Image 1 (cartoon, rainbow, N blue to C red):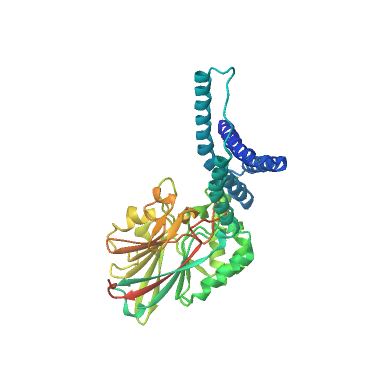
Image 2: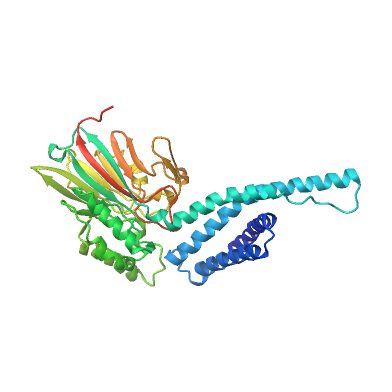
Length: 409
């Protein structure tokens, strides 16, 4: 209860300054009413979705949109607060000075300056429009990212081998079938030799995938589609009526992936053979630091793998790579992860800047990294979760070509 009281007080505080900015710039009463109405609708909808209809940490589209609009509104007002609050401090100082120096009766507070509010509103419009754009278009702005990685010990038969990686489908968030159909077609258009999915097929429950099962069953690759589980796939964020119900949900999801033609690797390995040579596709269950599930067992997954095999590891959470994989006795040539989503918010200009707040949580959060002669690709995610959009960090389909030999300088 206390957290909701604090939330309401803070919401009223920032809304007050938002209203002051609007009121200073325009005297149109209807615009004033519109601002107040929007503020009330956003707050009431958020409170209803996260209290009356709440299922704990379960996120559905209604809750996500309630959060998304709240985030956009708060971001707008948070830009206004320091500017207008700073102006208020100056106004009080001037009022006190006038009272003490001129000895006027009463206390005179200078009026707000219109141009300050205009500047504040102009700046506040930047995060507002960005977040609204991210909800309307950004979340389905799919990008195909191509990488070529060189390995001296890659089997010759696999020189030029192409892998498509997707991650974090989060089917429980989808709200536009046409856009998802386009993305699935885009994956198939890459005509890679294998498709590897690195976890989080759903937000909470296996049933979320039912409307999309037939569509994702159309994913095809010559050497198959491989998958692992992500932290959301275990149903850990749902208040189940019994352990049996939770277990059944996980079994349903596993069977669903099998029905879709996915080779689900649960601490296991599949070998892809070509011209008498092979590469190992190793898949671990979710392993993550910071309170996330640690069901992944690297030793168990690689029990049939030879130390000299060329290895591609699928592990949902990139923190696993840093904590266990790169220091393992086995040399895992390429690890494929996801999980971070790049926080669905950031700035990326190739060759110039790559930034997201998620970098403060994860050392490896998006793209290709290399340490100790081993690579990891952290996919930015196919879907979205929580905030129903993306700003600057777009949904990703990764295509990696394996080449034999040293990389050219």
